Image 1 (cartoon, one colour):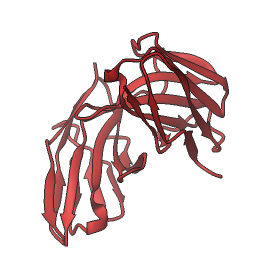
Image 2 (image 1 turned 30 degrees about the vertical axis):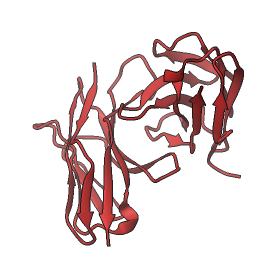
Image 3 (image 1 turned 135 degrees about the vertical axis):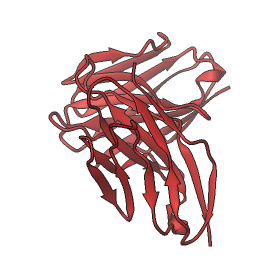
Length: 112
Length: 115
C-alpha cells in the first residue's frame, strides 16, 4: 500500500467515548500533520510533527491528544468530545526540504 | 498573520466552459502558493504550485500565475470537464517562520460541471 492512509474512514462516537484516529504514511516523509475540515470553514491546522517531535499545537483543546511514535505513524486520541467537533480529520505528510504535503482520505467523525 | 481569500462558490459551469477561480493572499516575504483539489470522498491532492513571483504552475490543463504585485494566484482552465467537479483550495506556505511546512488555506470553492 502506498501514500497516506487513514483509519477508520468513518467514526461515530458519543461525548463520553474514547477513540483514536490513525494515520500511516509509506512515503518516507519526516513531517506529519493533522487538519480539521469543518463545513463552510477553511481547513484548520491542528498539530505538526517533525521527526516525531511536536512543533505546532494550534491552540487545540486538550480533548484532542496527538501521538507520533515514529515518522511513519500519527495518532489522534479523542476523549469527551463535543458535537461541534464533528468534522473531517485529515492527515498529511511532507518530506524535509520540500514544500508539498500529501494528504490521506480523511476520517469523517460524527459526535453525538 | 498569513491569510488566503478565495472567491465564494459554488461555481456551476457547462462542459467546455472557461473557468476562473480567484485567489488573493496576505503574507510577509515571498510565500509558496498552491492549488489543491478535493474530489468527493477523498483527501486533498496537489494540483499545481508556484514558488516565486511570475512563476506559472500548470497541471491537467489548469494554470495559475504567481502575481506579487496583486498578491494573487488565480486558477484558470480553458475548457472544463465533468470530471473536474470538485472542491478547489488555494493555499500558501509562508517564507520562514517558526512552524515547519505550515499551510494556510482559503475556504475552498465548490465547482460543478454539467454535461
